[in-house]
Figure 1 (cartoon, rainbow, N blue to C red):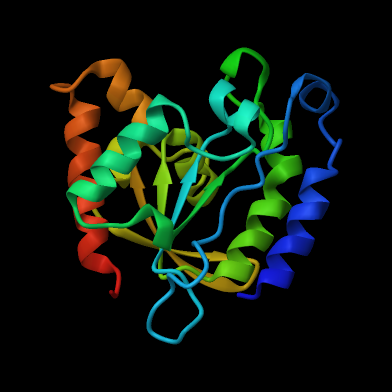
Figure 2 (cartoon, rainbow, N blue to C red):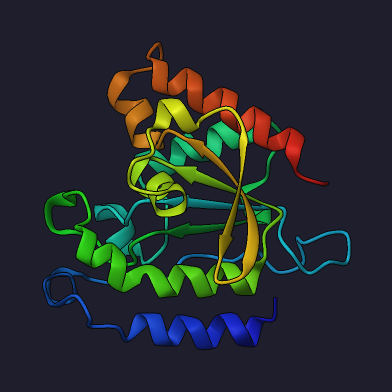
Length: 201
């Protein structure tokens, strides 16, 4: 990955108005974040991990950065618990603009935004992708996929002729919604622990 490639793609995404409702309602396009400069080890130029969520929320729309609200704070904590450093990961979303009222992205919106995430992944070439939540999971694995059926193993997925390894899990917002003793929190912890064993240092 080169910073020039990422910057050019970011400018293109930031100018997108393909979804008129989203373009009018948004404060900022949340392009996503590559790993912090100097954090990629091993000489491959590829981040170990890409975290892919659903869409920006209110905090992300205001900041122009992914996963900075309560869900992002929980994600940071859980990554730290399993010795994964967010700064070394790419952090992305299926949709780059906040849906009004934080509604679920519509299929047409996901379809219009799909080429951007495809191109980001082609530039990044992460060792492992963690899909956070059902919208992200079905983006990779198909609309008939369930979280319960997809969790706990690595899926080999080909996107635009490139092979990717994908691990499916719950979105941090679901873990917050069901509370610290809920099944989504336990599953998210377990799945991030598994991710930590699957990526090279």
